[in-house]
Length: 133
Image (cartoon, rainbow, N blue to C red; front, side):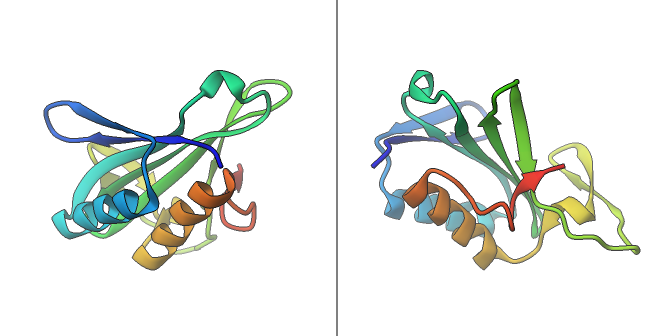
């Protein structure tokens, strides 16, 4: 199994937890969900060992809106995979000072947990959920 570092971007500094366990991730995700804002990243410990594939999963949250991105090393570059749900009535939503289209955002916290658990257990997330633009 891959070892991960959990980075909690608290207001004053980043807190790194190495060799993190799923229970620690779940506790932090629930804490951020309850606080209504925050940012965390789940990163592959030995980033240099990743020739191709995902390297880190990032979450930004504010007021029940979740932005999740997955960084992936491809044959040509590093690319970002993200959530996308078409909506002709989309709106712009501010998360931690930046505007995002609601088509890129998740409102379902259970889906956020599912995405993080899948990445933790497999090192990837289904492209049905997070894909390239």
